[in-house]
Image (cartoon, rainbow, N blue to C red; front, top):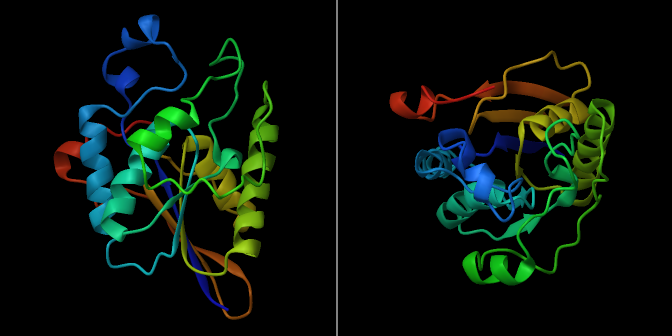
Length: 213
């Protein structure tokens, strides 16, 4: 059976635009999208409007939820929070395990979240690069085993790479820009192939100029 997996990175984040936000934030490793990040997410939703996506999976970090939420509104779908797609728990980036926003907050702000869904994998702090690659790759394999329809995965730079390489192991390194889109397709012979990766053509010229590594 053929299947398409769309993989997207979240939009621009507030602490990229305003680094001072980090110094006073209650959850400094879980920043929201910036104003232009919301615009990017909305443009991504329009890009995917005509695709046959049946499920949206998102990392449980706020920036990925907010990106997925914009898309889910356009596609009229719920959001399944998958911890296995979460940010790399890199001790060089984070001095302690990252605290994300609680379900009580998310349930009110983002009613499209499907709270019946249970994550495939849970990250452990700290993580090496090899460990986050294995974690996100294994999550991708579990998702396509459980869900046979076309799906969208909204994650982070590390999870975009991990998911892509989990399905297509020989994928060469590619730039994971903000709100980039990667497409992986399973053919009738059950082989996964990379259609395109790191695409940002859906973004306006202004939005494309702010994408980061």
